Image 1 (tube, rainbow, N blue to C red):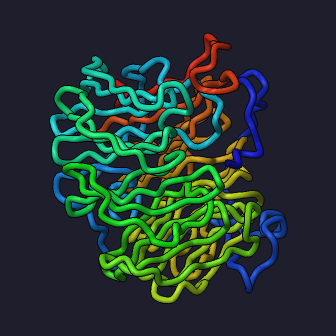
Image 2: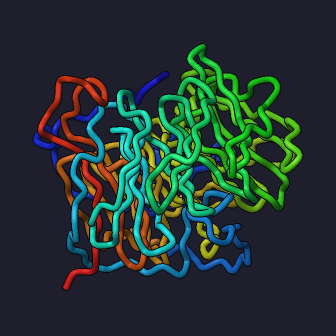
Image 3: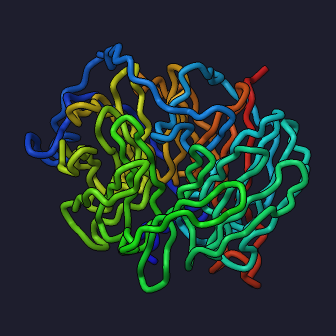
Length: 445
């Protein structure tokens, strides 16, 4: 399994610089210069991203809370407000301690106002809103633990772990209701829809597969007969009901598409650098007939859901592990890159509206709430930006690197960091005092 090629050291090793916003008429592949040329010569002005009354809506099943909010994985919360200044309400200690460089998992709200945090220690931890622990359920506590974000539905939390198993955990007690061994490892987040769980699973060969399981009892209802994706699918799948597609990326540099809900294989799309150089690690988002995702070949893509052909690609200055957030009010895509920038792109053309620079790679996904964008960076910062201009509202620094996707619940911001100086592996005997925590931020008084 290939890891992040840009490891980050301790906080003391990270230089700080002045961040800024570049606004430009962007660069989509086939009609543009390289990113370096754009950064050097791009037009800078005061224009905002225009409002676009698209009327497009995401699909959020009733009573379900899961990664990126919707079946389409937009990471978009239009009616949620974010504070313009924040204080720390509490920190959950020793949530993450391992060195594996995949983005850390995100918090998910519970139906009664609590929250559940997954960690690379292998524990799923339920908390009251005030940070009081209710229970913790163990999964892969001797390995790389949990990197996916749970789906919460039917009084349970569904989560995969790096032991290759999918777990259903009772929300009241923390007891494991069922456990299903599926493969070698699970780094992806489950997708809950209509009483079923869609799960991408990795095998050690390398190999991979997509499963559909019954959420009630954990029985396997379907597995791709050809074991597609054909390499480690760390990517998180998305469903687009309007287009009738299920899509998932893989380390082989391919995006795979199936018809949905009948699950017939439809097509695969090859990035510009197939194989390990073009790995698709991050989650996929679907919108307006297209699949949006980043690749290690330094591009962000939009691929047509009907036939799997490329609509556009946008070149960044480094690989892309971050997943996109979609904002239909602006017809815009927000996505980070290892070049340290968060990009705001036109969803239809791939043109860049603005980019916001941090000091280190952006691995986690941005979140759009109301008129704000939240994103973490490996420079140890969590940022709130004005979504139409990219202007900084506030920044909060940490000892560890912020790679989880922020989630706003009842006006509070929940997120996690990776440990600043982790041992070789989660569960290693070479324990360290430093740890990565889970955080709750609230409006400053």
